[in-house]
Image (cartoon, rainbow, N blue to C red; front, side, top):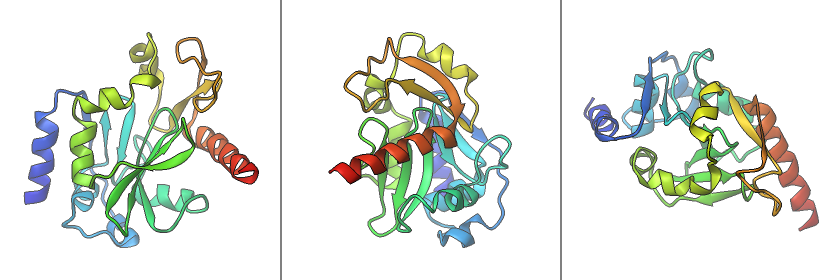
Length: 201
């Protein structure tokens, strides 16, 4: 309970638009081998997910109608990624956040590089990061003039497909075409291109 109170204090002190979804807790912790007294464990037990500024989604014990269930989501993505990571969130651009179970650090699958980048922070530090002003700088190059209005139309299981792709030299974020698609489609596109690039490396 102490840890959850600390998390609530972080969220409450943030100036960001934060939505905490109601918990739908089941056996997600046991299935993912997560300690219930860890920060991630407390987020899963006490929330269905946490949405930040309408474009960052942290996973909890979601009901699959308003947010992803972290266990089911990881089962779905297991075919793509290493067993040493737990996917703990995503963003509408096709990015993924994961917890490296061995080092206890947060990684970001960046849609502008199609690579995992080490954020070199713990999960608790990650919550502080995404709810602080620092997150604005992190996503500065992703946003366009009508961004805030456009993302109001995006559902929890959707993302925005930007073309030319974010990783391409031709991408001009202001002029690029933006389409709302299912997040699974957006991720599949990124994974396919990542595989192609690895073949030619």
